[in-house]
Length: 421
Ligand SMILES: *Cc1c(COP(=O)(O)O)cnc(C)c1O
Image 1 (tube, helix red, strand yellow):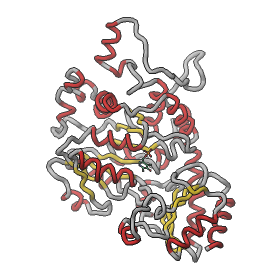
Image 2 (cartoon, helix red, strand yellow):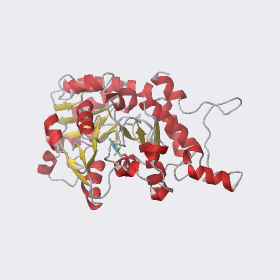
Image 3 (cartoon, rainbow, N blue to C red):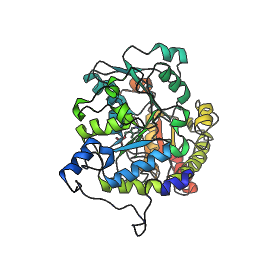
Image 4 (cartoon, rainbow, N blue to C red):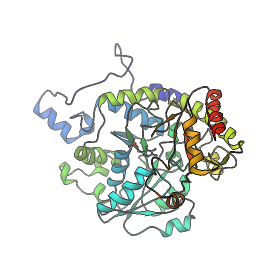
């Protein structure tokens, strides 16, 4: 099946007389014929569903859809994107380990990596994503267990050189994790470029309608965890009656361990109803992404032509620093999110924002409705003007998430904002 078809049909194939739509299986638990039958599913939880803290038939269908879309072998949904990132790292790193990440990532991920993981004894080594392969290689330590980056970073909109990061990771015997939230598998499939694990905040384009916070982890099934660096995969798991993940689940040891060990222990699993809503979003993902990209390209070109705008950051523009990488990794478009800096700093940015009538001022992004955020007043409010510059956020910067309205209406709204400046 092609991508558009997978969006509609992957993960659930109704049999004779079954409901057309994947039903919401709203049950915490599942009934078995005998004590032995229960014991069997405990021996191999991939053979049946035990409890909705880590598996559910409705969620399972959506997991399979996302695994198919990303070209992976298995996927696990989580209750938020943050939970997906947390588990993706904890499945590889314990106290005393380190991992490498590009600093051009989502602010919530930065806090998790820089502060919370430090408290857990896990070190994050930040390496600029424009670093050469040599610099990247030099940053690995003996205890480095993973490499992490974002395909299209939120909010910096930098494009990750996935092949370069994959090569460095693989030369050191560790997997590459890519957060593919903004690109979605419609615009980029990181596994095709060497990523071993893909994570998502499904709260953004996958849901797309601002309905539901959620996350997803996809296992490419390609990384060799028997290379000596990952004893938790190759030695018996005492918390799961001696399971050796690479032996018992050679197809997807990473995902199976994440579910049986970490999801069982943490329980940050979505409800069946959440998965049902996510599936509704996924069904139209391909169509929506094309339109988001088309509208955003027109908006970015318009903004670039205005003399009241100092700079437009959108990798779809030939003038953008990330354009060459975008042509390689995101040839069909670079999502609906644009950052731009208005002339006149914070005061003019606020005037622009407060004059908009169509775009809503909110802390969200990647919605079907156009929305806008002033990072210096919201997500980065605690920083001084100097600190803002260091973080790459200027007072005049606006993050504009282009929705699916008629692009003429979006442009009229922007003109209203520019006139008010
Ligand atoms: C929003 C976001 C997250 C966090 O996801 P939540 O669903 O809000 O927990 C992680 N990564 C990226 C790139 C995001 O945009």
